[in-house]
Amino acid sequence: MKILWLLALLGLSACAQVPPGSNQEQGTRSDATYRAQIHTELAAHYFSRGQYRVAFTEVREALSSDPDYAPAYNVRALVHARLLEDEQAEDSFRKAMALSPNFSEVRNNYGYFLCQRQRYAEALPMFEAAVRNPLYPSPEKPLANGGYCALLKGDLPLAENFLLRALARARNQPTALLGMAEWEFRHDNFPAARSHLKLLQDTGEYKAQTAWLLLRLERAAGNRDPEAMYAGMLRRQYPESEETRLLLGGRYDAIGGMP
Image 1: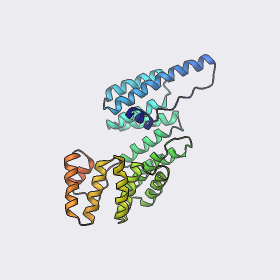
Image 2: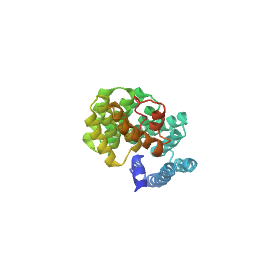
Image 3: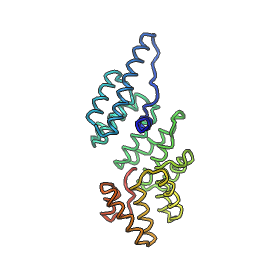
Image 4: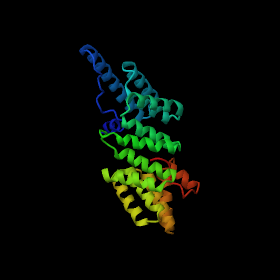
């Protein structure tokens, strides 16, 4: 199930299109594209396990079968991004978008990449572009990512717009719940923030981010014992998280990076 979820996340589930031409040409292209799809799915699997060298090998096999297979460039971009090879990642994202302009998942992923690097003016239009495709099956993802990215930028009205649209499509979307909890916290509406966090806790996602925002809520309310409890939880359970680094640096005004 985890692998199926990952493939859907990366936009690998759709069948490739076969261009018009003779039956023989269509058959050859179809076979090549099928091989590219299989190798791309394997690349995504190895990427999820942190086996980046093997993932690159599978991407190369995919592109040797079909050099125009956009999902392969998408996965290659994600591997480069994870390795902080930003120039190569950006080249692959742009190649995937050029080959498949309606491939919404790559626009979502590229927007996420840009937002992580604080290139907000470039990132936010990518999320909107992903949503414009009426055939995209999960528009709540780029909407939620756009909302959280707008929070990082400090544009609270835009964040609200994105996040409410995401929750209208999927009321338990984890990134949108986290974003709305942060939005309510920044408007001093602590009960509403806690309500969103309760729903987020029920999803089982973003546990470090949830603990960090709960800590900040308790701190703002002057509740020192619960604040200390969440601080201890972060240090013990998530010692390598961005939230723990913020805690140790005393940066209580920061919301952390993209979830």
